[in-house]
Image 1: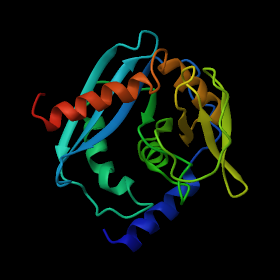
Image 2: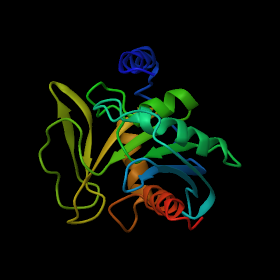
Image 3: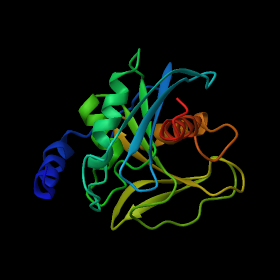
Length: 216
């Protein structure tokens, strides 16, 4: 696929994104998705871990190891990882109720980040939780867990800067598909009872790193 073709795919799929939801208010299972790269950048491992939403225990997981499917192009990063992530999702035993991506959804230069792309392609509710922002400006949220401030790009609110633990750096939450922003933040807090990052991201990160190291 060329850059022009990838941009065309984004343009065709972007109008299909549901930014309202409300999405599942009490999902039974929540999947975390993450990708790790080998040091030379020529090999990747895409992991999906499915957690029981109540206990946060991993109940299913899958990993796909391969090569990046697209060159690194700003704004088109999802095309590098999407095929491997879809492969891993296909290997799951059960379909999760919600996808939580280590990345962004609406908070993206072209308003179509990985969480949007995965949500539209799979039809599943999806949200993005980024460690660092791609776009936007914000005021620091309060220091208490649950405090937040809007992430604004131009005149548009594209996400929230959410404090998941007292006094710890915030995360950047944005809608991917079939999920409203307030509900997305509520889900992230429920998935992050002890640490900055949600358990979905933490477990998927461990799995994809272990796969690259040959420990799975």
